[in-house]
Each structure stands twice: as structure tokens, then as C-alpha cells.
Image: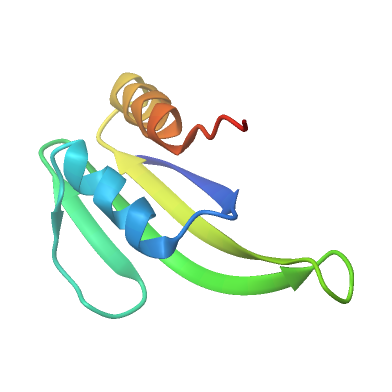
Length: 90
């Protein structure tokens, strides 16, 4: 089993969970760590914190863990998950 941890900032934790579900995973816990399982891989939302850049500007930071049976699956899942987290300003 291979794994990789990533951190996402400024994205609602509910959306991060929804992205796992859109990739085919099912939620199996309802407390931290939120665990999503799929065939050949799983994801976890490990923690959520708020960080301050200034006294006024604050964002959330969420740690997410990806695990897969092999490196190719891990790379594919992370790539597809990152597409879902892409934010385009405007």
C-alpha cells in the first residue's frame, strides 16, 4: 500500500468529501478522520484548522491522505482529485 498526504487551503471540507464521492468512494466514518473507500484506493480527511495570514485574512487548511494498492492508482486518483479542487478566479 502506498500513500501520500496533501494540504488544501480555502476549500470547504464538505466539498473535499464530495470530490472523493464523485471519484467513486463511499464515506465510511462520520468523525475525523473522515474515511472514504473505493476499490483499490481510499482517502481520508485527517484534520481541518484555520490559519491567519493577517488579523483579518483567515482560511481553512485541510489535510487529506490518499492511499492506494499501487503507485499508478495513487497517481491517477490524486490527479483526478486535484482537477476537482482547481479554482479559477474571475
